[in-house]
Image 1: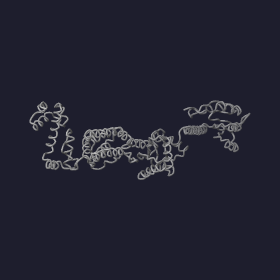
Image 2: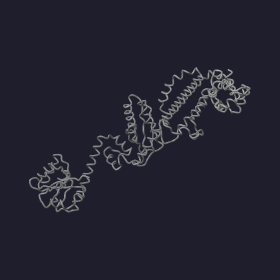
Image 3: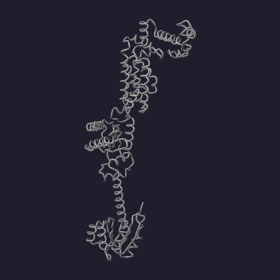
Image 4: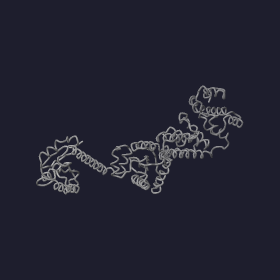
Length: 517
């Protein structure tokens, strides 16, 4: 630390030398920068050397100590002054007070008395310098930026007392809670809106004395004081309502945990940031408090290890094709809960939902020519998906699109369940169709549905499916397709199994049938 400078002024040489040697000045944070024997020379040395402390005798030739100090004060010098005198005269003490002199020492000077005086002066000078430093910092750091630096842990707690004095902060509190207000509006006037949101939040917080508002790079922060846990949701909702009423902007707020000391405020801030990172998953609630599972709280919740996202596509396609909105809704709920449980990031979720919607639209348009125009809407559908700000909004959009497609198809489908099944087989014989799959969509027991199917068609479900596949295989072979090509096109993946089935129905092998055709 830089030493403070001391100037000694006394008309007695032995006093000046005694002051130099009576104590170790370095030990107490000082260094002697000069000395002189009269006030007039002392005045000039003060101008040149700019000492922090002057030790000056009262009675001296040319200009006495009090005259010199009076002149210094007139000229604006605020250095500390200790007066030396051999006379404990009340008038001198009274004049010292008028001149803002810090202390005086009686001659002969005692070592301990001098140490006590300069230690007191040293502490006073250092405190004044520190206060000036904090004031200088405050010029570049506004009040909300100082709060921000406290919250993110960049200001040591030992400095808080100084900021308390400068800004009137009322730390310490019983507890501290950090809230973050999302200010991503995606509007052209975003900067002005941010400032207005900040102003509204600040007006509300200051009105009720709830704490302080600050700015971060990404969010508007709120440092709440002495909050009872049960009151927090109400306060956050009131902040939201205040912002919405004035600005017509709906904001998302995350809230960290309450902590008991200012040193732990950063922990609350980190929790609030982590929650805000999950706003796409939970942000539709607009207020996020703690890492609770939003939705997915009933018996339908399952381990994410039990969920096959790729396998959902076929189930969803069937439900849309057969116009069963209840099944569409249930399957999409499974998808949504999967993403909630896995806490997937926004991009991953949107990519998967995009693939799912585009894949189903494409497959449906291949089987149903009336839907071909939807393929041209792919770009718009993708754009809508990426505009969604929460999983719930995205979920609602996908459900709306799929049910709308399903309703559009329903006019082309028979109403009777068995006719729906035969119609579905006729159009989708190339897929891996199972009775159990259709039974789950129609909400039937598979055994009962199988009996019902046979009763109405005279054939078992598998026999009917095989018949449709072989008839279409015959048509493809007659058109010149090779056997291995036909196997894949009719939904039979095993070529040996296909040969066996084909011969049973036609009495000849596929190759022979093709050569005859």
